[in-house]
Length: 277
Image (cartoon, helix red, strand yellow):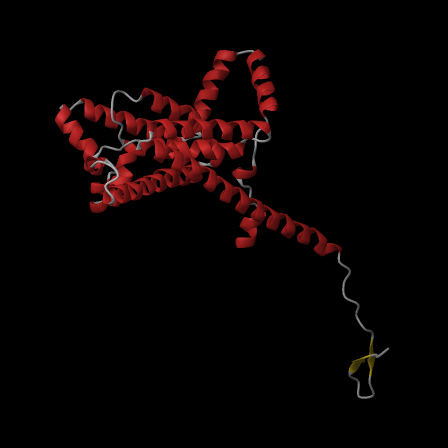
């Protein structure tokens, strides 16, 4: 069973895209007839291949609608109860780590929803739903726990105000940042370097100028995404090398000559015995 699964192993981490080839495909698609019909089919196929991203965007809409239907005081309490602040993480860490990813603080999250239906859906179609969820969860959970640990250290040494312990901190930005970092491994050559440099410069500058725990959390999630992608690519290459090695052995096996058999002679009592040379 394991050898059969390894024989058919194909990792999405090793599938990269060439920007120039993709640009030519888009140009050819644009010049083909029935553009409007094909655009509708492309949108349908894009969203159908990313169920987790679509469900996430719909959940964000539901939670926003819930906040819209309650008073400001009740909405603020809901946000605080789902925040990954130090107070909540000490009491109910698992609950707030899960709940905080599905709430947004502010107005209608149209930018986040569009981002999930486009960029996050593209990443999910590349990685697959389970891998996408794992990268997103690593970024969200890992960055949240590292930030909370830093806040606990700063509060213990009187480096930041005490009210940070109960500050609101919800949203999907940590997980999304990790997925954006992992997307670098879907590119090749100069585009990968430019994408990595642009993300590092953007979040690095935000952490340098903003210096809030959220800015540091985004930078941490970016590093987690790069790290998860690097580990996944390394393991995928090893598995693919093992797959190729097994395939080569399977091809070479029938080509091996059969073992030589020794001629047999009959003894005086009628039993056959091998002849020695």
